[in-house]
Image (cartoon, rainbow, N blue to C red; front, side):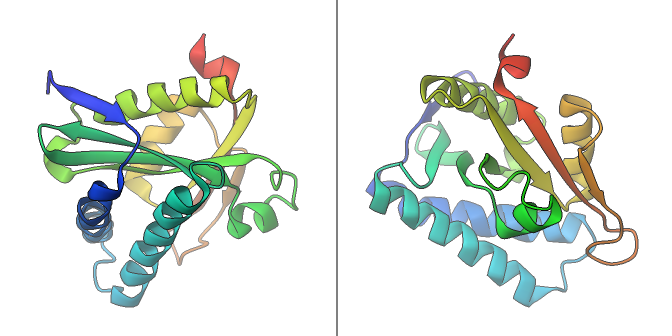
Length: 181
């Protein structure tokens, strides 16, 4: 873990990144008890693939990814881009103009080792450098929600049973200065 590098992805990383998306999303769905939702898994993987493509096509202007690399293995990712339609609609379009931080993925073998915090810290610096003052973040995964609540407090929006009974969706609005000071 001492040699983890956080950097922008390169074209040569695309295949490994798409593999990371598949591993983390499949594992997350299984952990959440919804591993049987194969179509949803594939939709989520495809969304992340499209986001990555948008990063490369726009040179980081539409979507901006960072990756965590340990040796020659990609072990994590994070990105920001326009707020999703789900966030926009659920906030009555109050968050529509905010950027959304997402795709915070850490390979299951590297979770709970600080990789996510390294990615977040580097993303905060990238946001500051681009003079972004606030961002939003959302999650429908209970495991991730626990992490985000601990890190960012009570969500600004709680969509009760959004994904089915007992499966809420949460949305946070975060000021960059609050997480970098």
